[in-house]
Amino acid sequence: AKSRRKHRKIPGDNCPIIYALKGKDNLTTDISSIKKLRSSYDEIVRVKLIGLIEANESRIKQLEFKEVEFDKLQRAYGKLEGKVEVLSK
Image (cartoon, rainbow, N blue to C red; front, side):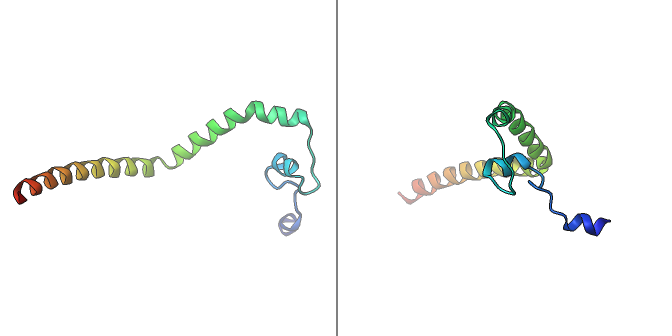
């Protein structure tokens, strides 16, 4: 049974509205469905972004740490560069 399901193509895969908007897999939609999708768009994006942030929280923290360290290095380099200029005059 599992192998038969594997070969059976589901129209629209996991997002039939997108396929319908593109006119693929012989799917169609109407203006009311598009309006419903648009009214939910902000919530869909918000939930997706929150999910991505939560899934990558440790990476984000690492990047924030690296950014802080980079800023410190830039400031230290700037101070060092200023001292080198003074010494070379």
